[in-house]
Length: 79
Image 1: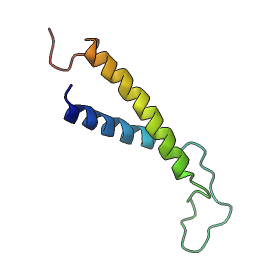
Image 2 (image 1 turned 90 degrees about the vertical axis):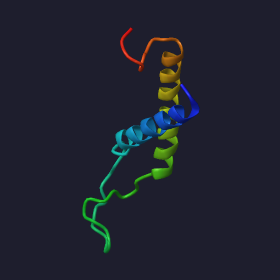
Image 3 (image 1 turned 180 degrees about the horizontal axis):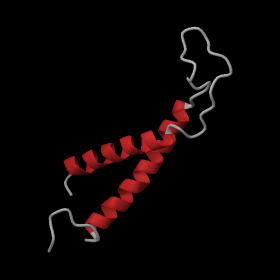
């Protein structure tokens, strides 16, 4: 696995993870404030979700890296 593929894999894993983490802990605002959609979350806690996403994506990436390095997963075809 070269550095470009490793970074690309991390970016893809990070984006998939952020879309999985975004719905956690969402509470809708009681009233629609002017300039806000009625279904907008009251407090989205984006910083916490970005940190959690980064940590979870790093753990998933490390497992993938280990699996590729040890031959558990082979992306080069059937052998």
